[in-house]
Length: 354
Image (cartoon, rainbow, N blue to C red; front, side, top):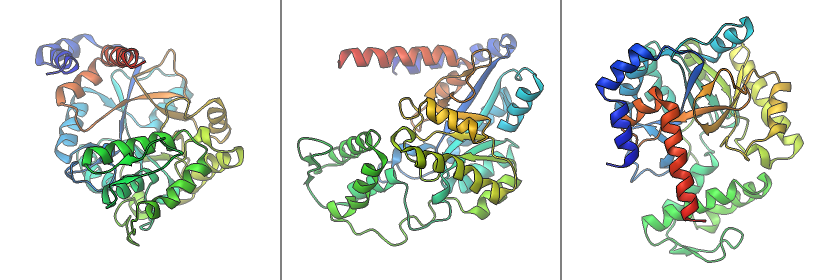
């Protein structure tokens, strides 16, 4: 058992939960949970980006049952009402969010949320919704590297040496290297590279490669009628700090307009793609405000403090597929302690590798 898991098991055991339930009545802290996909596929054989699988259906059910028993689950509309009326946030408040707009949010997560009567927010990249021919670019990278028959490939703009592809581990490393590079270069450079990737790896992509991958607008409308809130995740999911000013305006403003046209209601919130600084910046935040959003959601990790809240850089608590229930409980019950420990570990690792 790792040290983080040991700390989590102590903090989230029944005795600690009993003490917390009777003493932690403080307001002013919001936990925003960050999910991507809820799937039951085996990550070892998954043909796309397995890192986006946040939980299986069974685990998600357990997590949501814990949330329902111990927290007050809000929508961003609830939060906006508090903000507008000058009311404090409810104690032990949580918002459940999903990024991107994968169809399993409808097939796997929505039935659980609906049965438990829990609201949630899904941030969608509008150009992909209902499109069965186009993968998200990170899924395309993963698919190509997992299906190529090549034993190595050269991308000098990415790495000075050929990338070996003889094992699953080699391919995983190559995928991570490509994704890191793609998030650092101008968006047009990334797009040109992605457009040529299948040919470079000698892959023929199926014409319906994205069949069943993304939400349809009919499913989005059904979920919206069933208590799910929808927000923007831009039009094409670029790294917003890597696009020019004209594209930035399109990504932020058009995505809001498209969702509002389909659903007939105001879109309050935007989630920045891969929203860790420097992947979004002050210009992005200011344009989100000018576009009429009330909240901007980042992917930095931690709880949201009401006293120190930047409503256009709100952090979240990440949910990952390898988390135990003890770790999930501890992250929610004692987020400051768990995030402090996680940051200390990451800082220590960076010092060792500097």
